[in-house]
Image 1 (spheres, rainbow, N blue to C red):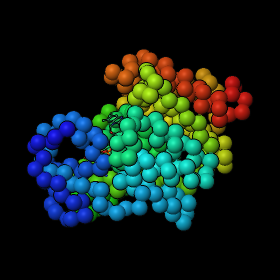
Image 2: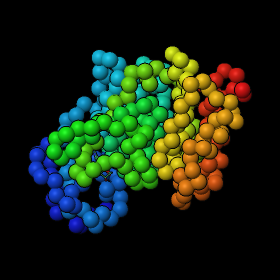
Image 3: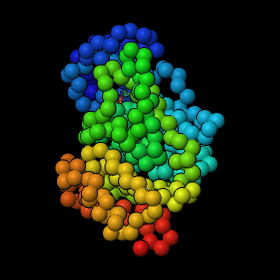
Length: 274
Ligand SMILES: Cc1cc2nc3c(=O)[nH]c(=O)nc-3n(C[C@H](O)[C@H](O)[C@H](O)COP(=O)(O)OP(=O)(O)OC[C@H]3O[C@@H](n4cnc5c(N)ncnc54)[C@H](O)[C@@H]3O)c2cc1C
């Protein structure tokens, strides 16, 4: 797609005042996929030189906004942690061609804020914390599960940059269960549910994405019964929170989310039915 209103591409490493019509350029897989008549200039992040994934001494994992899906997938396959399989499962949940797989960035996926954003699912389920940098140089941190506030909506000010998402060490130690449903084979996710079981205290978290306009993360001190889980999801997710587009009707998405949530609960708890 030619973005014929864009007159300039600025290297993100160069400091210059933010202007109306500017946009950060991650991998460009969304920006170049449809007309962007409001844009005049792209600020390219591809040469920032940020380490794609950094393991800190405290065991936490910092994923740079510029880390591509391909890089994250590769990293996930080398990660020695109970939650490691979730990296590949979420990367594969992308409706991704070769180009998208190799170009799309974790930051671009979060900032695009599509309900079917699998990097939103991954980072929300693993207690990710977004590091945001404003144009005046100040930083703030927002939980990934709260960063996306609706379909295409996120907690990001004008010119604010998503620098990275950090997953705490404890989240990587959790057992995980993953389920995804699409209306058609290799289709965009219509419902994606992730369960995580904390080995330290037996608590269970269930994160519903893709079916809903934003992530819903439900935490239970002890694994709930099937009925309690169902009731908790129905209480948390209001009628208008079930997403409606060509990839699935809200009623179908709710049905699948409840069904998949029960499957992850069953997989992660020994008795299954309580
Ligand atoms: C065929 C096709 C299939 C797709 N399938 C899916 C899918 O299954 N799920 C899905 O979620 N998306 C999908 N997409 C949309 C898109 O490819 C992804 O959302 C992708 O992750 C966007 O990442 P990117 O790095 O290319 O972002 P870009 O296109 O570079 O940017 C996306 C948005 O985020 C902003 N942005 C980028 N990086 C930052 C940053 N660090 N800080 C602040 N703002 C930033 C940009 O200004 C822009 O508004 C698909 C697109 C196509 C064309």
